[in-house]
Length: 392
Image (spheres, one colour):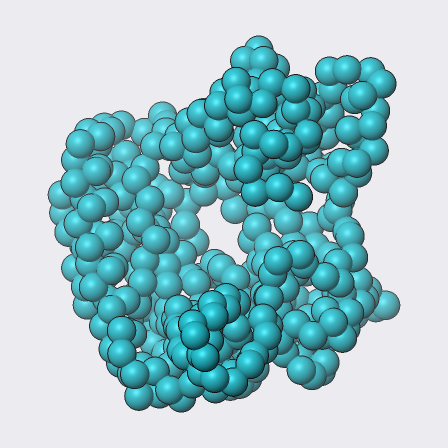
């Protein structure tokens, strides 16, 4: 695997289509590598190619077009392309099953990512993921446990559970019905690592899941709960299944966990978002228990129903509002970091730099703070080291 695409024989691009900006970046990259490395085999897969395979074909910037599945057969597909030339394979994602694959090692990663769910049944009006990824589907508990045991055996001290809509995880196996809380309990019977949970939608939490997140010390105190807007009027138009009051109650319950970082997503400039709606979101971000926010500038997506909502917010106004919220988020994250100064934390060593007789190590804490320290002790990547946070 090469870091510079200009030297590669095969280029594999996993495409995203969450925003218009993601689409533009994809074509910019493909045009660039097509010019600088014309002899490479170009493969595009993922959400954009699932939705827009014909556009990709017409642009002549790729050789192989795949959708959201078949990624684990990519070597066979490339060999077939070499024999047959142009290759397009887009599956009917309404019939796709969970594409299972056993991973026991991640090259160049000190933390292991385990995807246990794919697809989405929520159909939020601004989003194309439900159409691109297909219906929600889950990895079997027995397959998950096999991977967890292998990853723990291979020395990974942190495992991240991920999914397109992780909170919707469900699977029936051996006459037992599993939800996210059930598989997490099984996972925690395996020792030797901490468990990080990726994004979970607000409506997926019940009291049992909340209590599990709060009370289990091995679950990292870092939760990503998408809000999208603090205006109940806008939330309803987005087809989000909660109110601001219920979201606030959820964050209060999760804040019972020591040193927990609560992050969220906010979309700025959703159609019909008034100045009042924006001010509600702004003031909520300022005063709420949210510690960090990923701020997205709204853009119409071809297959999202919100493109038919009017009036639209002007692009310059969206940019202004987004900039304002990003500044607030930055300040709140700094405040959170300051609250953690003096605390003892365990970090996973991810980078090492030699400085004369000392080493500089960097990594992340369990509550997702980027941290570095110097020591004469020799640690290796992936080691779990206790440190005291002293300064920003």
